[in-house]
Amino acid sequence: MAEASISTNAAIDLVYDNTAAVSTKLAIDLVAAGGAAFLVSPFITVLDRAIIENANGSRTMATALKQLSLDLVRSPLSFIRRREFLIVYGLYAATYASANTIETVCEARDTNSQIPKLLGTSVVNVTGCIMKDRAFATMFSTSAPHKFPLVSLGLFALRDSMTVGASFVAPPIMSKALESTGVDKSTAASVSQMVCPAVWQMASTPLHLLGLDLYNRPQATVASRTQFISREYMKSSMARMARIVPAFGFGGIGNMHIRTNLREEWC
Image (cartoon, rainbow, N blue to C red; front, side):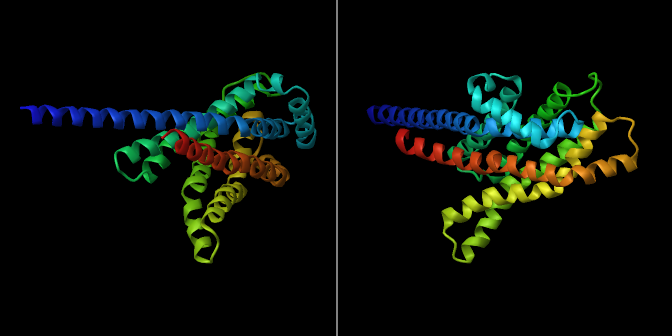
């Protein structure tokens, strides 16, 4: 009887310890996600708003980037209270948090996290990006607010699905290829995390521009839209590549390092 009681108590203690350990790791996941998102969101906000305003003709890309960057430098506290910053921060904090927490739960259940993490982060990031771009397009529009086309939402969904795949699926493949050539594992992982999603923007930018143009100029002809995309393609691609580097490059690396370091200290 006594042995059974001891065994039961030991089992309860083990469950409690495991639950406490997982809870601590989940808290770390949220802290890391919030910290990484805060580091990169100011730059992403500047770039995203500049891309939107360039597409609708309210400001050129260069002017928007200059003026928004000055706003950030001169009044950083005011900048981070803006609605556009809070939208971007919420989006990337949620994206990093979903990736972290899914990995922690899968780790606790001793299951592979790759597919659940891809699906989870895709749902969160794609949904969030669509909502963010819809909000930005209406917030900074030069015309009266009107219904956002469903086709534009579909184009944004396709664009972001491609980006998520290039951010979470392609980097491990590229990293292994680099390692096979003798590149250090850590270097290979960091380079792959930055290069893959950035390069993929060359393919997804036309979808982004078309989605915005359908809202900004609902009556435009096919020829006019083609001309618009051709004219804005290169600078918009460069800007989107520049925003992807902090979003999924520096942000992803920062999230990983904060999470790893906090786990070493707290777990």
